[in-house]
Length: 206
Image 1 (cartoon, rainbow, N blue to C red):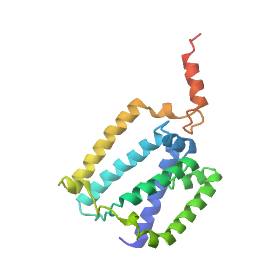
Image 2: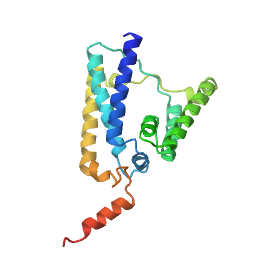
Image 3: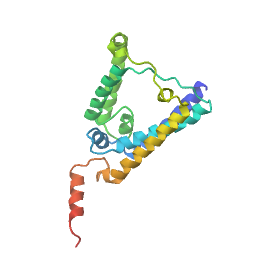
Image 4: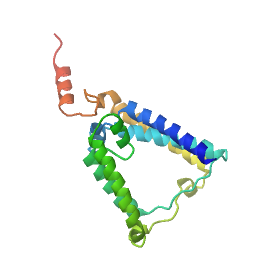
């Protein structure tokens, strides 16, 4: 695959991803913070759908020998500490790395500060990485692939993962319907707006 073709594919996939991100409203700060507070599960549904879709695509591409996979080693301490820091930042900013640009495009001016902070953090990490690589954060369990642990081909493992995720999505949507988790202003705010809606539904019809 040439560099030019890879760039074109990347741009096209970015456009598709951005379009889906905007239409799903998962970029809204209220949706993101609501997920971190376990008040709604819109963000989890969208991301699980992306994982299931990616698993099916990779199963096909890898199964037919079109692509090769190069898994990274699992670094337990770094993954746990980094995940906690990232989660805290997402909860405070109401944005994650994949939604910040969508927020800027939708007119959220405070997302510009989030983007600048993210870039500054990435630059700071690039300078700190040589030192961190000599600490306990660089220790882990090597490259772990679930399909190898179960002794099955990767494409079978990927498809099984997709099936499990689809089942989880079915349960989530059955218990927490998408439209009921959206606030009146379509930002996932289940505070006063949701309370007003419940009171209105509880009133007897005249």
